[in-house]
Image (cartoon, rainbow, N blue to C red):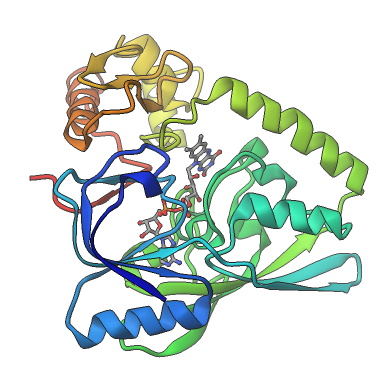
Length: 303
Ligand SMILES: Cc1cc2nc3c(=O)[nH]c(=O)nc-3n(C[C@H](O)[C@H](O)[C@H](O)COP(=O)(O)OP(=O)(O)OC[C@H]3O[C@@H](n4cnc5c(N)ncnc54)[C@H](O)[C@@H]3O)c2cc1C
């Protein structure tokens, strides 16, 4: 485990935004992850896990306590059985890397998640949605976690309380160590076609200097009540609020996809992104009568 004091975090995020970590530990597998957590807990430090940093806004003031950077994992195994493949994979493994490694061994089943940056830990934590709204929960059988009391235990898919952009891990304080996935098998050539076509579409329609969609899409009930043709919150920002392209400092609501905020200058501050977020929230409250929920996670203090 590599330990640093007052380490800059911006380069570990897809937004390239954020202050420093009081302590930063970089780990390469789940044993090191457990050790790092133990090290922090012994000293009474608050602990934050950072995977790929592709779904977080880190405060300009940084993060107090220990940040554990868990993105170097390479450990996974697979077992083929009755047309499905069981994959056991550690949380610090990069999702895109795993997809490729599995393809190389003739295993499919992750292709609908092509183009989504980040780690397996992040994918489980947020229950990511891929092509056609396919949820990561569909392929999760069990999750191995470290509890706030320091115990390792397995949480089943049902107990994980997966919903759209949600899992119990967002409120339980459990740290995701590994996941058991069950991958339905589609023919390799078909899966490769999905990767090529959907991957290309994502790159063309979504800016990379971002953290993905900032706000959650509308619920069915909200869409119906407002009589909108789509649940896309990007549509709301563009067509109803008229805020597509709005800029504050170095941050801007993307012209390509209005639910994305980009670090246009490369020097945007978290406070500028936050000002855009608050503007969208205020305007939505004024025009539609509700506060849109964030899809990204805020790390550090934003008072
Ligand atoms: C260009 C782009 C496109 C995207 N497209 C999509 C998309 O199509 N669908 C989609 O759903 N998302 C999308 N995203 C968002 C993002 O890629 C996913 O949410 C991703 O799964 C985040 O994983 P991460 O490892 O980067 O998590 P991070 O950003 O590092 O962390 C996110 C949250 O998870 C927590 N966390 C991470 N690992 C663990 C762990 N091991 N244990 C406990 N907590 C943990 C962190 O503390 C943090 O609160 C996109 C992002 C970008 C930049």
